[in-house]
Length: 394
Image (cartoon, rainbow, N blue to C red; front, side, top):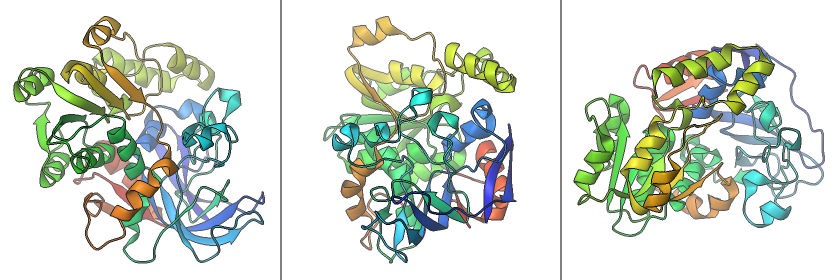
């Protein structure tokens, strides 16, 4: 089969690789019909190469048609249309019973002291081949795959794999109340959907921060107020001016280590990625190489006794942390990988009708054949050609 593979920092290519096969009775093989490029994939593309090997298959936002199932897989069958959650979870362990599927004990990568295995996401998370390919072997398929209806194009359901469920969790963990004001930092795919879901959950006012014209225009189409951080010098002050001097009731931090930080932090991230793998891992896990720009905005703009929901991915140490200010303001913070299947029952009914209450149909800007995946990575990384979200068609 053909698959998108990592070949080195800033380099991916589509190669011919062996077809996946059933290895365990809980496996399934799914033929990919759509598979998206995630902002987290750009971390692998640029920064986290020390955790990858040349030839690793990337991608964790897949859906397709079931081709084969193992003997213990009974809730799906060949021919079913399914979405695959990005985290691989068993459904029956201690954490899964509590709904914390991203911490599944069955698939935890204990050798790296990490949570549940993820598709296409480094040695840290199991080095499981990803979904930017023609076929995908799905472990724990007795539980993971989400069966979806046959009507509507793939893009209506595809984002259950990550974007929609991640954004739903981000909004739920932000403690949004009816009539409240929510600030969203960053208008990539997660920020876009987090802002729309915040409105759906009852926020009276949703303010977002970004600088990319196409992202700003997309958000404004959905009733989101946007502050351009290249035009507004002090975002925190601007938000307080808009909220009776208090700040936002809730902040969803949807940027993570992509944030624009100090030149030193940017150089530290780049330098860490260029070291030999062993040294690079040590530097990333020990030193303060994450860029804190979006977090600092969140800390500053949230009101006293407010809530910050951190959904942007961080890959190293973030230092220094303004503990005195956070303690003084009495801030609540929640963060972590999305527990995908925990939220599916809430979201799926919003997708199956003829209406589109979350605006899911207005997110994908580029649909490309799998063979053009390297071009998709480049335009997504560089924010060229109006690119907000790329979906690949194997």
